[in-house]
Image 1 (tube, rainbow, N blue to C red):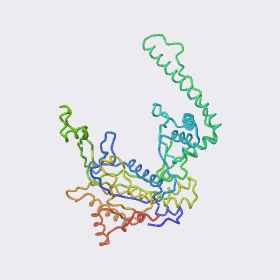
Image 2: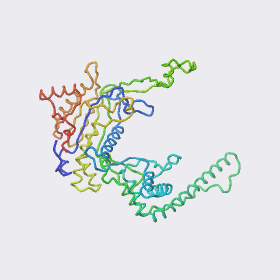
Image 3: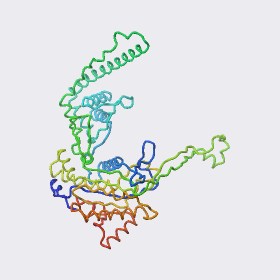
Image 4: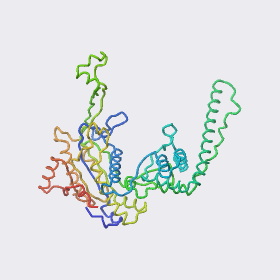
Length: 460
């Protein structure tokens, strides 16, 4: 791969713009992601049902993995700001107002919610969602503190506006509730055949508008929510339709759904959870104390589990990450350094992050890749098509080895016929795949070079 340390962003448009990553991994009796019914996700491909791990699950696992590493002072992004996606921005702002600036908790909560409503965000209507926005907002982790600092520094003007806003909002809510009650009474009267009350609501009446959030407050909050130097927002992007003038970000990472290279293999595992106290009595000959209908396990049920070798793919637009960082306010040198760090962390997270579903009962987060392939090109290269024909272990042998061989051949084929792609770099943690790589290397048929560490998968 071409070193990018001293390259300008425009230089990437000549051939090394995209870093493509391809990975094979095997899960055994696990369930990294599930649907609303607790079942494995899947789709039909090549005539067979394949088990799927969605790109959404993969991206969140990778994004949070990198954030935790960075916040813990680990990895290439240590020291950089990261983002958090949450509905709790009013709570985070209120907590900062009360803890950092000693505001009364109720005043802090009311003010924070009013300001975010004035910005255009809507809140839940149930008792447990009244302080939660209806949508998740992905913003720098310190946004709540920055907003709180501004609100405190401008407390007089903020409270003057928020007090009038809350009063008008509550009055409007009361008027709307009364309007609905009158409308319901009118409908009931019409249904019962009784005269409609003269004070029935006028459907053409319009509610008075609420006080607009002052421009300076709005700009301060938007600045706090702006992507700024949050690297994961530049990598994964965000879209916030609720605030028209809030900057959206087209992410630099593309992620495909992972799927099994063979037909899906699912099992409904019956489980029984024991009652410790009851078993203790039985083991100590005290079970005569139990009633006759107290036999059997404490809890029983079924859980769906999958086993299979998955192919997954993701690609980093190296030009786009630099443009996103420049747009966030970094100078060219800062953007170049941050982009190189982001690329190293992207490879790290893609290789090591695993969705956490059922991690305690399956230990699935300890899975290591069978094979990782990395290369650059002038466009993304997705090799999912290499596995349209499902691997049949009865004729092809172990799925992971057959899939590794097929991936090597696919890359060799594309490499022979395209000039806009680099040779691959391969990394394995599997004994059998290592033997396969050694065989190809000795024969001179390995379409690239072997890496000994993750760092060798990228030269950024």
